[in-house]
Length: 392
Image (cartoon, rainbow, N blue to C red):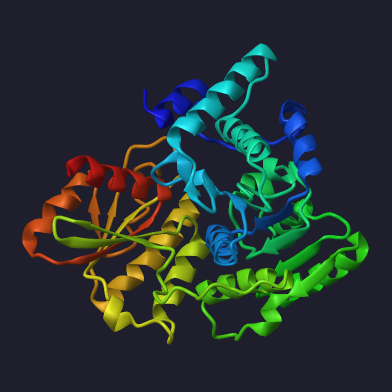
């Protein structure tokens, strides 16, 4: 059985299960061993930009020939994407061995673990078996109650604060910030690129109360900088704090968006799963440092993950701005436990709508060599990429 299917069968769909005590007890031996190994732990928190910042940190560490283990979530195509070292992704056979070991251990202890928690346990075991100089950990959701908070980070990166997962984090920025800051410890260093003055003022007060060092990287960023540049500067600042040299920045501002060819067309996959992420993608493409003529898209395909109706309508309006530039936008649905339901959230736009996303593929033969941006849900991106791989 395919590893991803086995995980779904054994542990169900990935969903947030707040609370750390159960998983803390289960992984306690690994936490003790990692504490003994003394790696430098960098935890990356924030609403948007966590993945890019974490992967940039890994790129810088590899550039400096440092050993590391990178934990990210969710995965797009392969579960092995969540387990990355300086040599690349973990081998599937090794990951399956780790997961089967943890599943057997959980069964023997009568511990019910979630999808995310079993993967986290496997990651910790992997780290104990193959010690690294650095651990780079992307928070899954929030911070205070996320499993990565079981490890004490010496350095925390805080990318952004906006409204997301409000059912868990609250709807006010100060409440969301409080949850993110739950990963901090006394004596640690916090690097942040928050754009809001009053949130930075709260950080300044919080750093003095808790007793950590706050490095306000946003003070070094031009107000005109796009979010990609802010995240890149954040990762560079952290690397330089260890007296290491940043790796050269990718030439393409859509470096985070993977490019793939299919039937002679070029697809750029760039997930933007919440309203703030959608706005930041538009801002990136409109930024003066981005060559829109060179990277101009012929079409934009959008599918959404589950969100409130208000968020879905807002995102549909944001993505429909591509049409103002003469680029056709198509909204579609897909089948996944976390996919947005059919509810008419696209109705306030002039974009096309396709209930079956495979109909979008039928348009590909109209003319060759199109450049298509696929955005919105990471789970939709995963399905599309999987379809491409199976169709070869």
